[in-house]
Length: 123
View 1 (tube, one colour):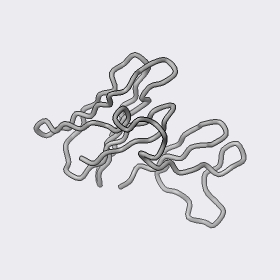
View 2 (spheres, helix red, strand yellow):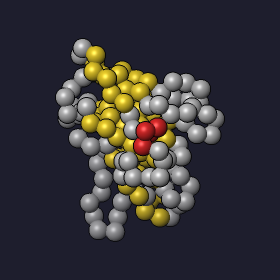
View 3 (cartoon, rainbow, N blue to C red):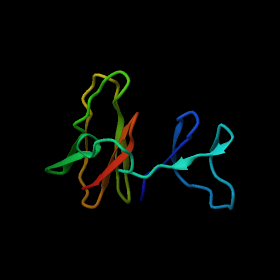
View 4 (cartoon, one colour):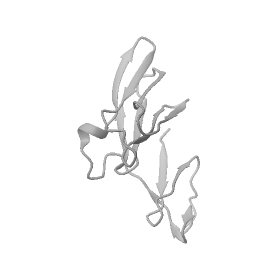
């Protein structure tokens, strides 16, 4: 299972897609335009400050992101996705971007920065 996030290039709205439309010239629209699928690790942000760090501790994974958590620049959420589970934790400025999820080899973890978009790492 993959996490699909789409973004409006006009207003910045983001949506998580459970099942996308496969019709030609169709799909999710915002501000009158097609929303764009976000590709992890593809923006100009510093990799070392955005890619989630994973530590396996017993039957769990601890996901953290070494990122600033300022009012106008912060990690909004982290997520863990595998073939059976999607888990997500949201953050506010000033909080520590850290979450604990069940461990499953082959999972993917994601972090979403309000300025630099979607980032991911494999477990």
